Length: 167
Image 1 (cartoon, helix red, strand yellow):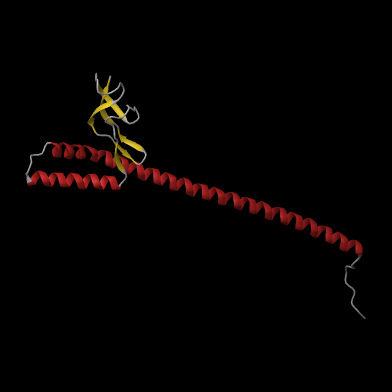
Image 2 (image 1 turned 90 degrees about the vertical axis):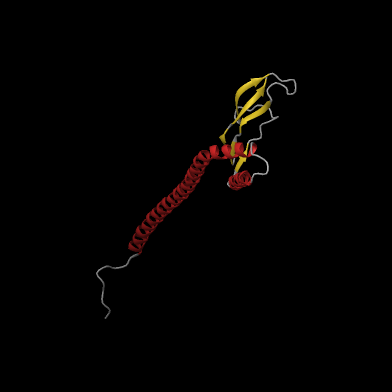
């Protein structure tokens, strides 16, 4: 004779157990969706964090490079003045000019460019006017002489050009 279990399976008990399992499944699915949403938010936050850190690192590197190059510009100015007034046929002066060209070439490779000012309209973002002079040759507001060369680092003005402007 078969053994009887303490609980008999009835259609009502099966339906009740099925309802309990369905509610547990619904709760588990809701919890799974909640965890998935949290994971996706954290992943997006981390991606944004990584991008922000990379941008800040790049900006800090550019600023450090810019600061270092600003400190070197007076040396470039001195070399430029030395080569502009050098005696002809002097091998020492030829060496200074060679150093100047190498230095200028190195800065150009790093993204440093001269601000072309002479003959250009005065731009307060790129030029610093320290003199004004009447001129029949140039129209008013035009740069007629560069007194100190200005430089750009990529798209940023490192040092504006000191200029004389036609009045």
